[in-house]
Length: 162
Image (cartoon, rainbow, N blue to C red):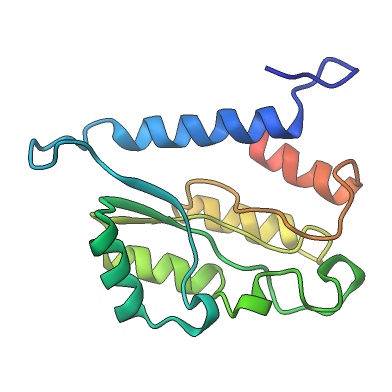
């Protein structure tokens, strides 16, 4: 694994290890003998570019996905960190935390959800933590205009560490 100059795990190595850990934990106890091999989709968004739930469900079925993790967009917010409201998943019309939680809750055999928020938004860590306590498996992609070493990101890292 790649480490930074101060001996800490690099962001890329952390994400790779986290993804493998989540995938491995989801595989435990999932084999009911009905499928030759499970298909786990760890990156899907609800309402992506206006896609309906029905179209999304049909797509996942056609792809043979047996387990899907839904990644929510960040909150609606116009700031430098969202590039004026563009970089929070909303340019693709993706839905947020509650929509992903509710969708997964209605389909617990095949869907899980992640948690997300704009890291430098007021209460971001509290919101992500609340969603993790509700059952979110991971913190969704942080594709915001916030430096990786910024205090807001360190707060997210501490939450992930907990």
